[in-house]
Length: 247
Image 1 (tube, rainbow, N blue to C red):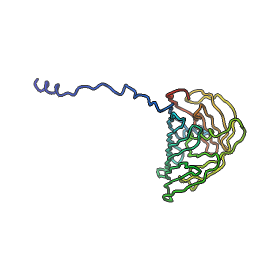
Image 2: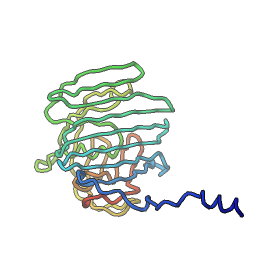
Image 3: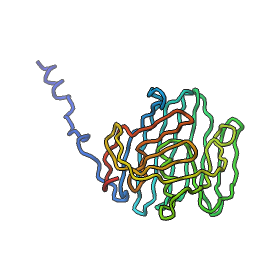
Image 4: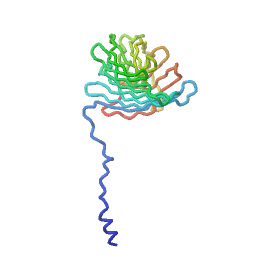
């Protein structure tokens, strides 16, 4: 009995469950969202990967997207943190890419006046280079969720086919370096589409020669992405309600 009393006395007091209380909202974040894009093949509808992403929009309108893609026939893993200003001008990004379990490389890309400063580490070693920036440009780092932001540079008043100088990740020897190519953007129209996450009002665009994208809201959130050359379709499978207002 004495041992029982001692054991009882030594039992630590139960603390209140703090996990049930959400953290206070960050007043510096204007709105936020998170989602999942699931990949299936266009031809057979077979699963081919998944991308998860989170978005935060700061009070000054600048946006940060954090994306991770896992899948593909080469067991790819692509991680990207990517920032743009309120008008979708590219600011900076960091990326890493794996294929078949091996690191292809990593890269840091930042705009500095009239230059895109690029620092990469890949199979060829470490490299730093400064690339001259054209008037109006974008940076493509492959995760489909990021492809919507190129269309923030589209002049909807002018409409039609518009060429956008684009620095493309992996454009040089499959590694983390960038090469510049013009990509044509063209607005198709407003469309209501249904995907696993629900039914959404979207803007449909042609993206280059063989890609179609459907975007929604002020942050150009990717709802559907079809890339015929790779036989892939990404669709929004999950969407967490953002803080601070609608998408």
